[in-house]
Image (cartoon, rainbow, N blue to C red; front, top):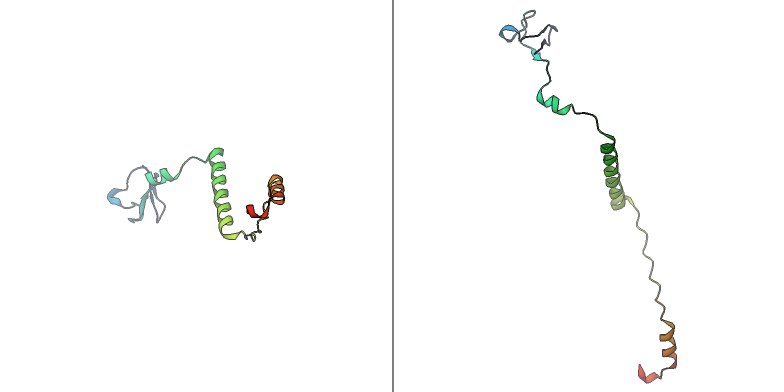
Length: 100
């Protein structure tokens, strides 16, 4: 395990005696091997599939935010009256008034 003095830069492959640097008597030393937290943080680079999936998900999130908060709503158009079937129109025209 390599050790390094943060004050003078003295390096050693084994721990300094008494926990201090033999060159400057400083207790400001550190272990230079990566800790498990650093090893976990230092992952391999993302694959193309992960990058594409990440872009698609961010795009879906951006579209949802735009659709919900930024898009201007168009005024609703009144519905056109439904046309009656031709057979019903003929029946109304020929039927006597008392049937209705």
